[in-house]
Length: 149
Ligand code: ZN
Image 1: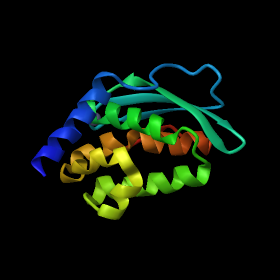
Image 2 (image 1 turned 135 degrees about the vertical axis):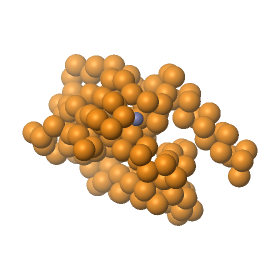
Image 3 (image 1 turned 90 degrees about the vertical axis):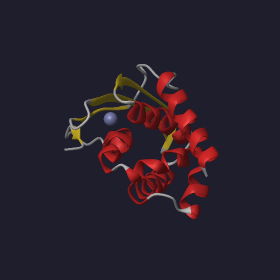
Image 4 (image 1 turned 90 degrees about the horizontal axis):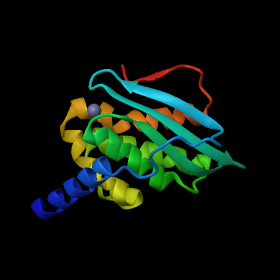
């Protein structure tokens, strides 16, 4: 497992240093800010949804490697997904980062499984899930600010 662990860390480092889908989306029809005061992670998420499908998603902000990598991976995975699929992936991801390795969940999540190790560090779970809670609130058009506290 140690080789796999290293690979996973490389993916996280890569996404945190070079986040994908980073920047403002001017044609977004949902946007939301999220904040994790425990760590200082902040992000703004922009979503273009058409006919119930996520066409595009981008984010900007700053935070620790886990929060940025998780947001970056999320924007890649969610492209082209329906709301029902977003909900299912959210639930799987939440299960993974709170309960750790689970073969079924990891096979459904694909590359998002790199974040399974977060479950061993309870303080980092909020870093990993910040973008996800922000997405949920964004597509629900929830007027409340998203804070992990
Ligand atoms: Zn963090």
